[in-house]
Length: 239
Image 1 (cartoon, rainbow, N blue to C red):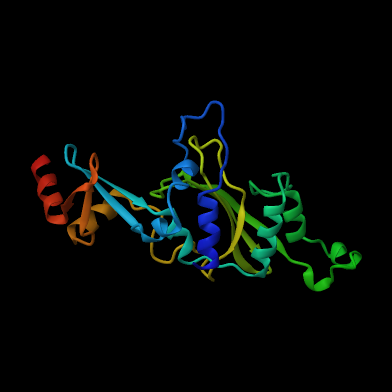
Image 2 (image 1 turned 90 degrees about the horizontal axis):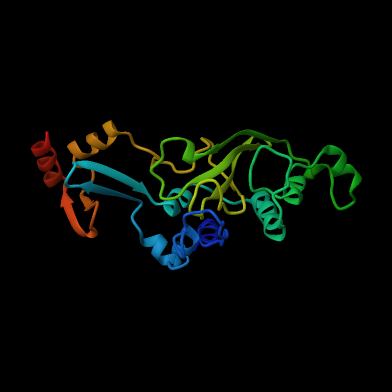
């Protein structure tokens, strides 16, 4: 288990509480479902799953949030310090354009030059140039991810990072994990080849080229599957 995998798994099973008006019922929240799964369950699941609605001919794609987050992201000393401060805090009071961040963690990450000189425990080398470039929530756009992500793109000393929360609740308005900091590659990507979203044209192209081998039945799941040829034949019948 890599450090990134360990951190992401911890986020996936993080208890984000129960809101009075959410639709989670007794155990329908994502953290409740995830806590029933082991680390190996997440690691062994497919990176992406295609489901086929035999009645209507529609294809649905779902991307594993675990695999999406653990392929390309890294943790360095800056991330470890920030995340340790997050773990020790119980507030989201940071004055910044990112959600889920504690005041203490943000202050430690975003030290001003005066802080670096005035505090004997710090020095000028600890000063960091931090810029939040944009914040985002995948719920507000097209996404095939198995869970909602909320976060912010951050530049630290000229390098790309991301502050990320996983939605572990039922309703998108609440139930997010504490934010964690990850380092990205030079391109600033979360995953180098697994796209967050594919439109209808891309899915049809995958089907035509038989790029996807197996399609699960939309109603029955893995207990019933279709080959690409069977899916194409059924769609032709419905056309």
